[in-house]
Length: 235
Image (cartoon, rainbow, N blue to C red):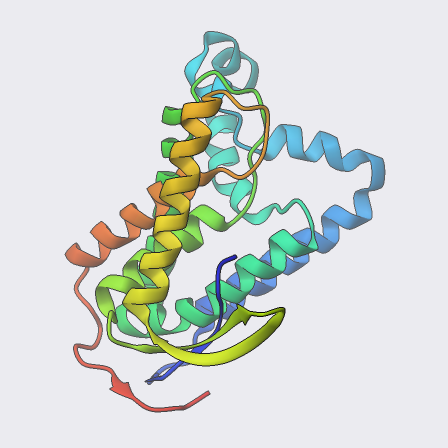
C-alpha cells in the first residue's frame, strides 16, 4: 500500500490558481460522467486514449489526427470512479501547489499537460496493440511528482502510513515517499509487462513512469520563478 500524503512543510508565496482550477475541472467532468448513465461508455470510447488507434492504420482513419490529439488531452480529465478521482486529486493538491509556486502558473499548466501527453505516449509505446481505453489524470500528476522530487527533495511530507490495521501520521522526506512511489510503479509495471504485455485492463503503470520521468526532466530545464523555498506551515 502506498502511504497517503497529506501536506508538505513549504511556505508558498502565491495562490495555487492552476491547481485549484485543475481540481475543479476534474471534479466537474466526473460529475458530468455520472450524469450520463448508459451513455458514459460512448464518451469513454471517444475521448480515451486507445493505443491501437495511434499505432494502426484503422485508428488513424477512424478518428483522424484531430480526434487523436483531442483524446490525448481530454482523457486526462476523465476518471473511472470516485477512488480513482479522489486519490489523483489528493496527490495533485499536496504536490501541485508547491510546484506551481516554484515555476509559476503558466509554466505549471504547460508542465502538467506535457507530462500527461508524455505519459500517454509511454503507455502507447509499451502497449501498442492494446484496444483498452485509458483515462485519468494519473500520468500528468505523476509528472508533477517528478518535478516536485527534483525541486524539493528535502521537503517534509506529513504522511499517513498503515501499520497494524491503523494509520499513523509521520513526517518523511519528499525523496523517500516519492522514491518509494516510483519504485512501486516500476516494479508493478515490469511485472505486468513480463506477465502480460497486452493485458486487457488494469492500472497503466508505464503511463505513471513516463509522466514522472517527463516531469523530472522538464523541471531540470524550466527556469523557476523562485529559487529557495522557505520551510514553514502556511496552508
